[in-house]
Structure formats: structure tokens, C-alpha cells
Image 1: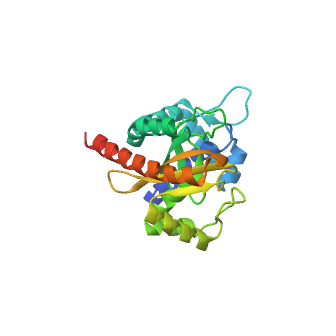
Image 2 (image 1 turned 45 degrees about the vertical axis):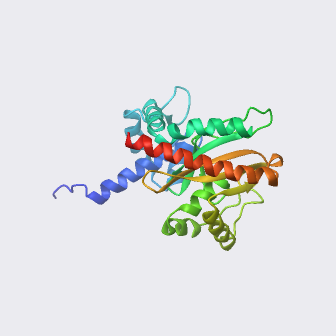
Image 3 (image 1 turned 90 degrees about the vertical axis):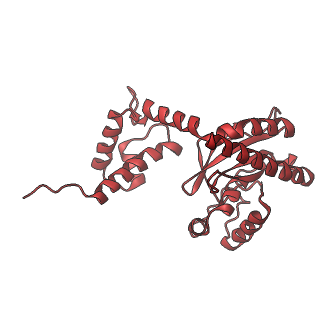
Amino acid sequence: MPTRLPTENSGTETAGRVADVLLLFVDGDQYLGVTAISRALGLSKAVVYRILQSLVSRELLATDPGVSGYRLGPAAVALGASALRRYDARVAAAPVLRRLCEETGETTTLSGLVGNERVYLQQFESPREIKMTVDIGRRFPLHAGSSGKVILACLPEDRRDAVLAGELPALTDRTITSHDELREQLAQIAREGVAVSLGERQSGAGSVAAPLFGPDGEIHGAISICGPEYRFTPDLIERYRTLIRDAAKEIQQHWGWLRKS
């Protein structure tokens, strides 16, 4: 019987599985074993083991003596560092977010759109003793929190509908889980160009965010001012809405210049 050559579809499927395995390490435990990965992805242990061995051979994953499971390896760390260095938005956003942090006394953040989720890419922490900080690199859904909602409101209609067609889990008791209510709020956010969240993603946290569009005109992420909810009074929220809008415009202008240079 002649040997069957791998088809384009089979190669794509294999690449997808490898990517899925790596992505489990973004939000999961530091160490993951064959069984846990197999259950999470619905793959056989034999398939998972082959993928893990391939990733270890390329130093994308690694093992430690006396520890059960696999962790991200030096090559994965190098890739992540390279991606962050090359992400022009971080370069453009840094001086603006630093100044905004000093001006407001609150933490300022940059989030990036990754698939149908977002991740924090950068933060400048409030100098105050009581403050809000975020987990850089952690993924969050788009329906909860000001940064997520302002990104979701600015997505192309088909992508926005795909997100809204899915489940909207409650992250706190204030998370909007009604599709109709969320659609109504997103329409308002799209009109105003600013989103506000009071305890929707994290209890006790307040934030105001604006969308960040790249030189290609597409939504790439968001910037935010965030801190303890009790400090986000109506008057300050109105002030922050203006500040965050102006900051986003400044970053976009600088980002466009960076891309052309």
C-alpha cells in the first residue's frame, strides 16, 4: 500500500493543535502535564505527548528535575520578549500613559486585542498606597470591564456578533450578562468613544477606557485609567473621559508616525 502523504488540511490541523497546547500555558498553571492538556483540549495522550516532545526539542517548553509536568521554555520567553519589543503601540503609548498616570494619580494601562479576547500589555502603577494593578499577559473576555467593552464596541460587526453569540459569564455580580443590555451599551460606547466600568470585571475596581486604532484603521486595543472604585466619583469620571480620549488620539498619531519611519 502506498504511503499517504500529509495533506494541507492535516498540516493545518497539526499546527492548530500545537498552538492550542502552547496557549494553555498563558493562563494555566505554571506546570501542565499530559493528562491535564489531554482533558483540556480533547486530544489523546499519545498526540499530546508527541506535541510536547516536539516543543521541548525546540525549547518552547521545558521540564525541571523533580517536578511533574512541563513549563514554558527559554525559546517561548524569547518569543514573548521579542513580540513586546516589536509592538509599536507600547512604544507610542508609554510616554502618554506615564504622563496620564502622573496627572491622575491612578494606574494607566494598555490592552491589546488577541483573537476574541484582550491582554494587558503595559501598565504604569499609581504612586498611591491603595491602588489597582493588572496582570500583564493575562487574557480577559471582551464583555466585562471598560477596556474590553470599548474594544468590543469598535470591532467589525461580524466579529462583534460572534462574541455576543457566545456565553457572557459573570465575572462579578455587576457583569452585564444580558445580550440585549450589552448590545445597547456597546452602541452608546461606540457613539461616545469611551467606556466606563464600576466593578464589572473586578469587584471594587473602577476604570475608564478609550479604543486604540492602528495606522491601518483597525481596532488594536485600548488604554485605560483604573483604580479603586470609591475614587471614581461622577465628576472625576467625566474628567477622565476627556483625558483618556485625548490620550488615545495622541498615541494613535505617534503610532502612525512610528510605522512610517
